[in-house]
Image 1 (cartoon, rainbow, N blue to C red):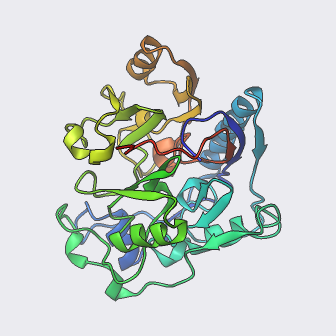
Image 2 (image 1 turned 180 degrees about the vertical axis):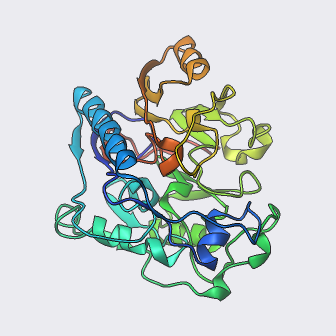
Length: 336
């Protein structure tokens, strides 16, 4: 699997019953490490207006895929939870590599029932009975570093157990990029390498972006071409050595997108894009400088306005996971 082959089948999330995470010390370390230790953190139900409008935007995204000829799956949200996101961001929870589905351990116990529901018989479980369960173990206080609060030099996660979100990973044939951050530790990179075996290589990005996922930091657009966030990747030296012969596009400064009630994501919504094929990308519609950059490099851009992207912490990339793309299992990063 890769990030750029023509999409044949995709799962798109739902905002139904999505809620802000139930706050405990573990969620504080993972999601709110940049806030004061005594800050009052948001939690609880989103307004019905946010839920309804977000679902309208997800339906629009689903129609974009259908118009492109892709088969679209939507989760059956038949459960009630006080967990984070519910099934709004399926890319956080499951990783598809070739014909294999891997469930990520996640980084807090309160998100584990997302993939449990996702892989139930009423959702993906009946269609993908052979999946790799990487996330059955639970976490306790010893798995976290309290010193991470307001300290970018200390990551939230220890290395006693594998802890990683699937959205910490990008795929390029037999190569995978894995971001070490507050949502992915080195034990998780090792676990993923062990699961995939010697036919694949997991390349770890260190000291790039500490807070969360990889998909607002780097996008793999097609073989040999990547989009980078210049606020996080200062030069090719920040990339794995095996990837430094790739051509790089530098993402323009983002147009800041507003939010309702609480902001759960960074300003870099223009990086949270998704490729339908090597020449077609779906991009936040207000990001005119980014759209112009893509068009100048020969891409077809399909704009979409996901009104609550920053409130619900997920744009087109977060809210989708490809179940099937056209792909070749090649080595793209280090052929030497």
